[in-house]
Image (cartoon, rainbow, N blue to C red; front, side):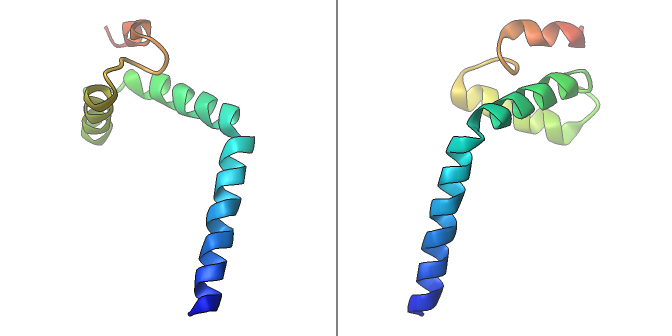
Amino acid sequence: FMYTLTVCLILELLGGVLALVFRNQTVDLVNKNIRRNIVNYYDDLDFKNIMDFVQKKFKCCGGKEYKDWAVNM
């Protein structure tokens, strides 16, 4: 049991370190994917539901700003 907890702790620490190291790349990747998928917002129900939830939860628009939605018009 102790071995399993130790492995879990090490994996969590490793995940945290990797998240800090690759933070900028991850943010850029997420923003690019959001902007790319905004074009298909009305056609992809899963993406639409996710974006609606995220925008309501965090009170934000698009990937970086509201102008990202201009490609959807």
